[in-house]
Length: 198
Image 1 (cartoon, rainbow, N blue to C red):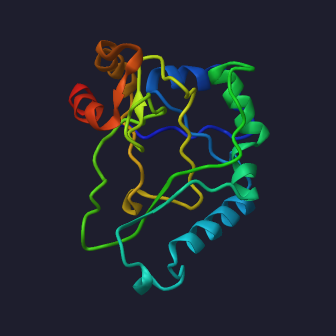
Image 2 (cartoon, rainbow, N blue to C red; image 1 turned 180 degrees about the horizontal axis):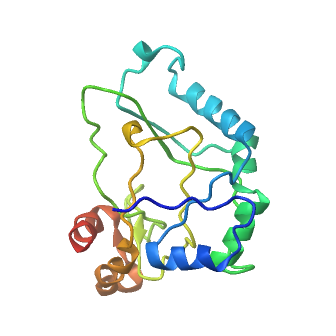
């Protein structure tokens, strides 16, 4: 898997961004929000964990899930001119809605035990009628989601349990989703099939 190429933060609206998105299925926009906003978000997330940022002995679990966060710094992070310009370019002007919260956050920590959530999966975006709570579904037209955003509020290397993205997997997924029609299927059902297709 080749590493993503960083995108200059001062001019995301170019043909290269669209070409990369179409070819790879994602783009990375460095500097999409100011470092001070990232630091505020990180501090709020640390508070939610109950862990001491300066004391690794307090980091008891391999992963802590923090639900959606709607404080000001998170709204600021997702609503920068750079990101809005990228959303317009990738989803189309007036084809997306501003968000004022972010999450859920899987916060990973060094630990002797492997977390039980580290496998490949596909993101769900809606709950069809009658579906159990939390059993989000995906369909071919990506109902209720134009783009999936992944935000990093600290420096991350391969040694820091980063989220992995399969470059080009967006080209394999449609044939998995097509048989499910408009109803789609849950991320649990689709995960192994998508894993096998890419």
